[in-house]
Length: 120
Image (cartoon, rainbow, N blue to C red; front, side):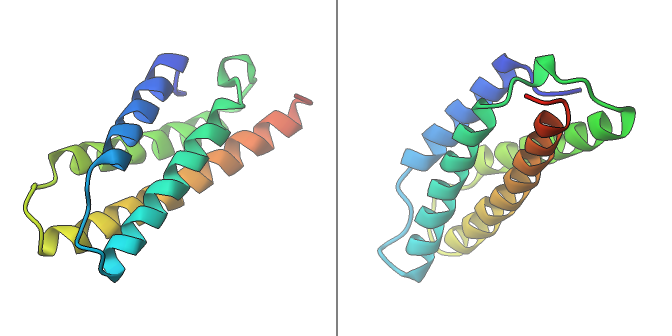
């Protein structure tokens, strides 16, 4: 399955809410977390440029997109369930956000490649 406009919008809204959530006490983890959240938001904006509904995808490309999207959804679920207390939470959040950014980069690259391939 390829993200529809609705699920992409829902993911962007969740990322926006999570982006605004306070994080940390000004430490290095806070800076890492803020950077990962900014990168994620930027990648969400880049994804909006691609109209995946108009792309013709091979079975392999569609499966790759679906896997990336499922992994991002799982991370978003983990981020939404993250405990509100600080301490170990900050390190775990940084790790989750950085993993989300890596997956979002892969997703952007796959979509950009597919869009160029079909001449969009």
